[in-house]
Length: 174
Image 1 (cartoon, one colour):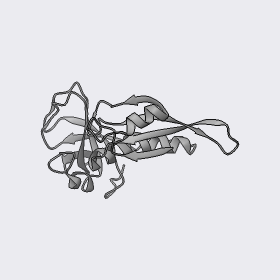
Image 2: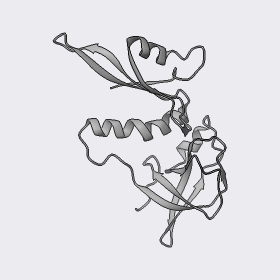
Image 3: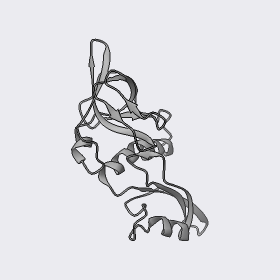
Image 4: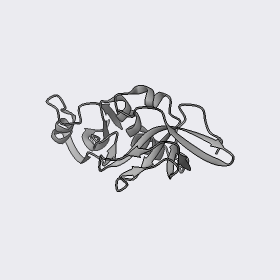
């Protein structure tokens, strides 16, 4: 598998998808998630050591650091584990009670960075702060990604949400 970061959006210098189309095939480009909409998956034409044609999978991740990290967790990690023959591809998901109000005006599935803690037998999720895709601390402080479905316009304090647990910070006993 070939992984690249950047060059998959719509700017003048975003050429990865054009090169992928020229030297292989684009399977899909863009996903309905935030952060991480620009994501390219395709197959590059190649040749093995015996001169036979082969297809090399390519994942083009967003260039924005937070978008790249979220996309890695959602798409790359499970793909690599599958390629390694692993059976359990998913990180744990818990139901948590939101401690913040969250708006989803993106029209996409939203993955907000959060700190998940367990108190009195319940999980609670609070955002790590501003959620801009250029704010690295939002990811550095997070131990989970709170999922807001694309059809849900808002989640209010006290609502329950699904939270994908990460392992970059303190682990929560699940």
